[in-house]
Amino acid sequence: MGHLMRGWRLGLALAALAAPAAAESWRPIFNGRDLSGWVPKVNHHPLGENWRDTFRVADGVLKVSYDKYDVFKDEFAHLIYRTPLANYRLRLEYRFIGPQTPGAPAWAVRNSGVMLHGQAPETMALDQSFPISVEAQFLGGGPGETRPTGAVCTPGVTIVVDGVRRTEHCLSSRAKTYPEGEWVRFEAEVRGGRVIRHIVNGETVMTYTDVRFAPAEYAGLHAAGPSQAVPLERGYVSLQGEGHPVEFRNIEVLALPEPPGR
Image 1 (cartoon, rainbow, N blue to C red):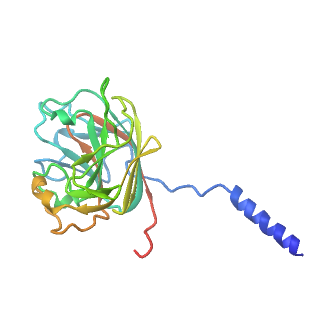
Image 2 (cartoon, one colour):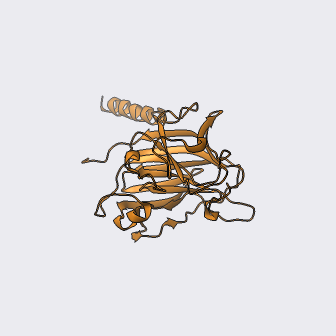
């Protein structure tokens, strides 16, 4: 009888190994038709005003477009997803297209990003260029350029990389350079502010930990935040427009379990 029970248990174990893994429950947060669920905030303009139709949707693609601008005048823009998130994976595809907008700064050529753990949109000032957040920066390369995408920038926060707290505004990633017009797959794995990973075309290119508010930087952003360097563990996702046309598609989120004790 013992050998029969052992055989039965072994059979169950083998069956469990052979069973397909449960499908991940990715959820689209961009419907491919309009900007439902998102709100624009353009520098110098009130929340909800989509200045000069900067954000628009066509053929299932969310476009950041400047064809209605005569000249770019510091109108840094963010399209903010209205639901705050804490523990999740975010994935999307992006590409840069077309020329830089007249008046946009030179550093913003083929430069965009997705802001993670951003402040609530209602708390942004009228003349606030960027939300307090941590940015996964997207860069595109011109001929002969080396511009690794998936870098990290820190408007209003600091992070720890390899055990060292970093105060530089941007830190380069280990990613490749991708040219204008090429769709690039990006994923962020966000576990509160404890650990965040940037993944480009399936390769982890940046990892950082312990995201904290940086009160000394708020004045430069015309923003208000906590008076202490407390952890930043949740917030709003936004897509960025800095003066160069960029497109996004297939924007999805996968909820991750809360850590024990939360």
